[in-house]
Each structure stands twice: as C-alpha cells, then as structure tokens.
Amino acid sequence: MVVLPAGVSRHSVRFLNSAGGVCAVKELPLELARREYSALRQLEELEGPSVLPVGIVQRTGADPGSELAAAVITRYAQHAFPYRQLLSGPGFGARRNQMLDAFALLLVQLHLKGCYWGDCSLSNVLCRYDAAAIETIMVDAETTSLHPSLSDGQRGSDLGIMVENVGGEMADIAAAAGLGLDEADLGMGEDIADRYRSLWSELSAEETIDPGEEYRVTERVRRLNDLGFQVDEIEVVPHRGREHLHFKVRVAGHGYNTDRLKELTGLEAGEFQARQLLADLNYFARKQGEGSVRTPAGKALMALRWRAEALEPTLARLAPHLDGRDPIQAYCDLLNHRYLVSAAQGRDVGTEAALKSWLKEGMPGYTLT
Image (cartoon, rainbow, N blue to C red):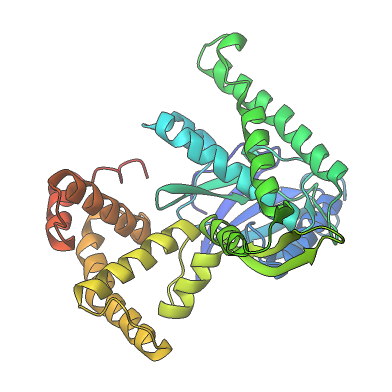
C-alpha cells in the first residue's frame, strides 16, 4: 500500500502498488460497486474521460449494504491530483479559469457520451496539467447512468447538482480557512455552468449561411478542432423557398490533437500537450528547411526525426530535474519558456538556449506541478 494524493470521498480509498502499476481500491456497498464498475466499463468502451476500471471484488459473507461488502479497483491516474491541492497551491489565481474551463469541458464530454453523472462535484474528479491548460478526470461513477443520448432536462439536472455541490465545497474550503460564508467563492458553480452552456452551444448550434459563404463551414470545423473536438459529420440543408443554407456539425469526441500526435509519433499526451508538441514538430521541420513536407511518408519521417533528434534527447536531459513529475508536461513548459524568451528578445532563441535558461532560472512555470 502506498500513500498518494486523494480527493474527499464518502468511501474508503487506498492505493496499491503492484507489478501491474498503481491502482486505487475503493470500498463501498455491493450494489453501488456493481453500478460504478459497470459505468466505468461502458465509459472505457466509449473512450470517456474517466479513470480506467481494473476489477470488482465482493467480500464473501459480508452484509451487501455495508461499506465492506465490495471494492472497485481502478487504474491510478498518473500525475493527477485532487482539486483542493490546486486551490491551496501557488498561483491558483492564474489557474482558476483553466480549472473551471476543464471542469465544464469534462461535463460536456460526458454528456456527449450520453452519461448522466448524478453527483457532479469537484471532489469527484482529479486534475492533471495539460500544457497551459488543465485536464479533469471523473473518478466517482456510483451515481452514473449511460443512455443513447441525454435530454435537455437531464443535462440541466446535472448542471443544477453541480452548482449546488460546488457551492457546498467552496463553503467548506472557506470555513477550513477561517473565513465567513460571504468570503467563499460561492459563484464558482454558476461560473462553470456558464462556461458549459457556451461550449455546448458551440458544439450543437445550427447556423445559417448565404450561398457563397461555404467557407464558414470550414471555419466552424477549425474552431471545434481548436477546442480539441473531432468532427464526425457535417449536414448542410437548403432552406426551402429561401436563398440560404442551414448547417450543423456532429462531433465525434474530444482528442483531435491527441489522435494526430499518436498517429504521427506513437506518443500519448493530453489534448493541449499534443497541440503544443505538434507545433514543436512543425518548428523542428522549419528548422530543417523542410517546413512544407507534403507527402504522408515525408511527414512520418519528419515526425520520427523530431522525436529522435529533439524530443527524446531533451527529455533525457530533463529527467534528473523532474523528481517523478510528468516529463511531457515539463517539455511543454520548456516550449512555453522558449516562446516567452524569444518574444522578449524579438528573435528565436532556439531550444538549446531556452533549456539552459530554463534550468538556470529554476524551471519557472513548472513549479506549480
């Protein structure tokens, strides 16, 4: 058994380090355990943003309604931490918007999968740094149910539960800090709900365009790709008797850049990490004087060269400084430092100079992780 950061849970959660990796073991009544395990299995098949299930255990002879009746085992989310660690850490003010955006995105992703959470709260997620953003992962699914799709009423119910839960969590945090209720961040839940509605509208809105404005379809797809969503289908319908068209898109899921990076390089990374790594791959290609590699074979070769000549050697040099932290995140923070130094000097300083500068300055931007 090992001690690792864990969120607030009504059930006992412990961590087991075995040959197969680190797992979280949560004890709970049998019916809740079965429900949670089933939901996590379904979300795994749908590639949903949740922890991965490993197994379910039933304790023979125990009262099925007791906390000792069963345990759900899940894969530990590497480099993840509970939201309270982020709130209490340095620089939370700068990270607040990132966390709220990430939480809204998580709820949108789940709803797109037909997942009604039923107990949406900050305590039921883990956070993980994803380049200059934050990724959130569902870790508690005992109240979850999966459907072919969700109605507006189901989505609204989940939002209402989330607003109430987050308000309670913020009140608890204020009380623990010796603050009054009027000093608690009670508006955080509504802030998340507003971000959710804005994102949901972007994903589901039907737009009207005039003939000759078909380029707006491409712009819409690019906006969705920038948000990390794959576009599965585009429907363009002429409006009877009028000279304009209606169009809407259907998204396939979140992970546009993650999938592109894995296809090109075999690397697995968060969505925004992947976007930054792909930008660095293009930077590397331009440095080689081959920025317009057009053939699939040429792109594949350039991706392999980037990994072998740029990424892996830099990760090896960073390794002694990471203390078990996420190496891909470290590389992304280095890239951000390279940009900041280059912008300040009005020229491209290059990765080597940026690396020396970053290490000398104590890896600014990475201390938060």
